[in-house]
Length: 378
Ligand code: BGC
Image (cartoon, helix red, strand yellow):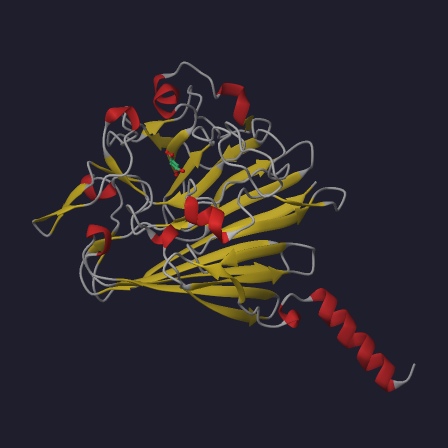
């Protein structure tokens, strides 16, 4: 073979075997928000046939295509095809939620002796709380996007400055979230934040998964295993009582594999409060190092997902509030329990729970948090 031919063959092989060889993803127009701000979409691909699309509005993951055990690809996250549908409102499909993801009781907390009041936008069991950052949380703002590349991975970095007082939170919070899609089939999420005043921060990714493919029915057959021997029980308002309770002997025990549907309708009080699973698990690893938190297996397609995180908690929500009113990407309504979220995070209501790991970011500190969703099929 001639040298030139050999070189072009090598170049072609490299292009097929490396995500980064495809270059930096470029932002493409995806529409405009109500006030005319342009929104862009970034597409990340890897050499194993995975494709992830994310937009600057809400840092929302629009689609995530992964192969099943036969190599057949499907989009495994719930969502919509157009920006207009996201602007109409969604139960946080694919978004980054914050400044404080999850609930703060009564929308109130005290910091440095000063009381803070947030808008209350949720009322489970008739108890008001602030949920996922407030009326206009990080899921509803336009972030600055930047395509990235490194050996074996493509990425997009979304940056946002949340101003002092935004949604009632103190301090200018400078935040970035980077999504990397690697040739090892990892969707890696890296959060970084700094502030100029002490403030609670709890950011997480709120994708709804259905490893059968979005629009393909319920998620009850998915088998879950959690590296968590305890959870934070809640009251009727889904606010933790402060206790760290062993899962042993309860429907929340996923220390060995169980299908979601097996015990989801249990008459256990915690399950009644959540209307199914809607709880925070206390991860066994509390070291802050990246550790396995959960594995998911979907038997009909063979898709598996492992979740690794540096966070101390994992909110597992099995789509109990989906009710068929929203029609998804493939034209099918998203019914009760048609998607589930595994949100790596700190425990709910931590600003009011002195015994929980702190969520207060101080000036001069840099918050760093990493979560990996790893995809295979077997
Ligand atoms: C919470 C649910 C809530 C849902 C909103 C989840 O993170 O755990 O209680 O209803 O978000 O979409």
